[in-house]
Amino acid sequence: MNAKTAKPRLILFGCAALAALISVSANPRPHASATTPSPAAQLETRCGWFSNPTPANIWLYDRDGEWTIGVQGGYQVENDWDWPEFKRGQWVETNGHYGYGCACMRLRVEKESGHVLEIESARARPLSACRKDRALNKWKGQL
Image (cartoon, rainbow, N blue to C red; front, top):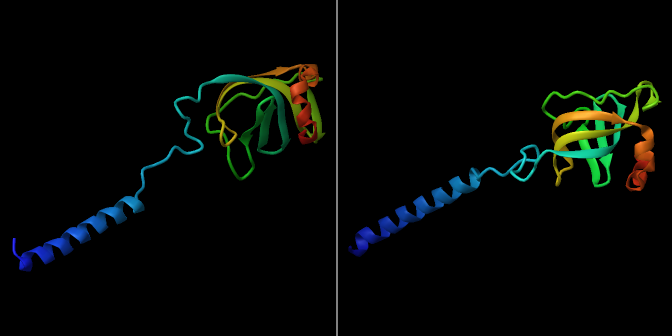
């Protein structure tokens, strides 16, 4: 190869490399989103305070943290699910019919974001079960 053909080939190679770099940075590999369960995110049973203080705002507070089921105008768990069936005396009304109760839920969570990704089932428990659990005392101010 002579000097006359080497320089244009070098420029062409440089342009191709730059185009490839721009293409890769403009279209990065997708990362797992906060709502996509990782392979390690398995269904688990979590028990604690089930809080619904206002429309579409729902959390479960357990010994490990605050789990967001839904936020009005924001995140909402995607699948349809049945609420715990609270009997008389198992639900504390704090805002009309909104309030909190004690529940166990079979669900899948995304631990980094605190989002509930899927709810398989939910069952109400007596308020005394959560009140007696010392690990749940830290949530009294949230209810």
